Image 1 (cartoon, chains in turn purple, brown):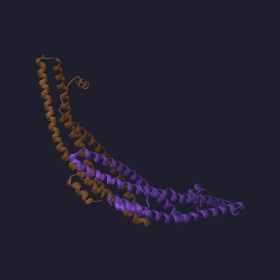
Image 2 (cartoon, chains in turn cyan, blue):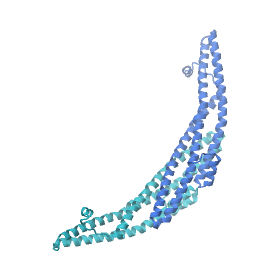
Image 3 (cartoon, one colour):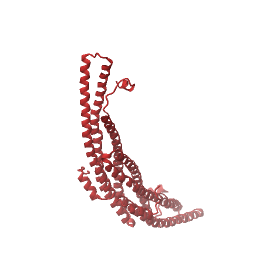
Image 4 (cartoon, chains in turn cyan, red):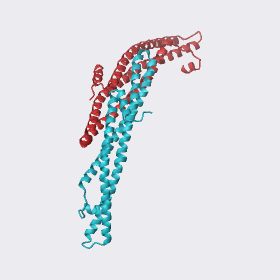
Length: 213
Length: 213
């Protein structure tokens, strides 16, 4: 049937409004996965930097003990690196929470709706295949074919309505989740990079991010 | 001669004060190289994070255009990531400057003094080998041996004095360099992680760090 449609030899049942929404959802999934790849990379890079800063804090503290001539200079650097790793742990907890939420939204919630949409698309092809057969049969279709068409039409319409409902619910859910997560991401990153550990802890608490280990 | 000394069969000319300083310098070189490894790793990790943040700023800006329903949320995240990469470039310039200076100090300046020290140590072994030969010759040393000993003693003493002078100059130079570099490192890192880009730019300007490209 898909082949006949591509060759222009068969007509296609189209719900334009729905198809625009479906294409938009697939685009959204692609873009969110793009963001997820970047924020996952960022979390890994910040984790690596945090480990280095912890080791650097120890190296500076050690040198402060061994170098009376530069004790203060090594000490204040040790203190700075140590306090950065403490804040880094909180930032990383927020980044992981953001990544988990975005992954669930993109690869579970959106994917679940796309599964229904793929069933709807398959039902559409089947239904149109029966319709083509009906057209080919001229003015004298067998009873059995008419019954089949009716059954496939109902199946197609049910899945079309399911898809439309799921798309609507998903839209509301997605906007709610992203609204929250983008605010968390922004607040945690801004607080960390402005050294505001009170705001950083508040952001993490506000969004019920699990505490760092 | 080194073997005889280890077996306790030969005496060894010792300048205790100088040897303590030499051992301390070797220890300092090891520790500074340890710090250099960590700060080089940190610069690489911060560079990677900065690239990710730049890509993330673009992805957020793109999504802001494509998502009227979450435009503001994507926009403020794009702005935050973009301003962080600008400050990141300045921090990285400071880190590279610190790493270059620490590398020059540790692997050129200190290494140069250690070269003189290795020559001094070789001269000490040669001188002591001639002394052992003298002891072995009993009370009747040949003229030639006495002249050789005298020549090696002078060579040894010259290199010992050279080493002592270089160690003293190196100490002053090292404290001066590290004092400056540790202050730069601290000021740049603190300013960056407190979002204080005025202080960050001031730190970099104060230490004449070459501007980021």
